[in-house]
Amino acid sequence: MNRVKQMKEVLGGAANVAANLANLDVHVYVGGVAGQDTHGNLLQDLLDSNGIDKSGVVISNERSTITKMRILGDRQQMMRLDFETVRDVDQQEEEALIRWLTILCQKGLDGIVISDYGKGVCTDTLLRQI
Image: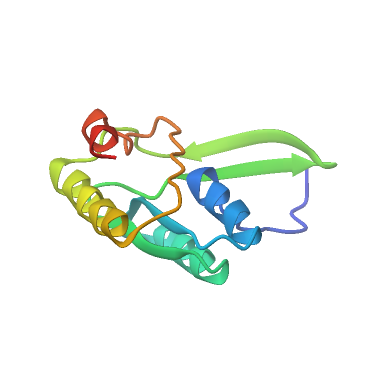
């Protein structure tokens, strides 16, 4: 048995990459899809607190925000629980991401980092548009 001593929420996946860039004093925009749920709200709060522009986060009623729960014992991961629905974004979500990227590219960017964890956001159509 392990007693819970601490619970902590941190950014993961592409949002973690964005946070690492923001910590290097880079102005970061992040795009993706989150659910309209508690973890989606938490994601947006964590992005805000890391100074990351979240204007590209599409909120979906059709999917939940990907969440990972790690259970540690004596500083070692004992178990990980994944709460996620893996499927390609729908056409409306994809079009919203493409519109957002198009506007950013027209404004001018120094670079684009694509973090694809195989969760359905980086579709072939989206990548061709980039």
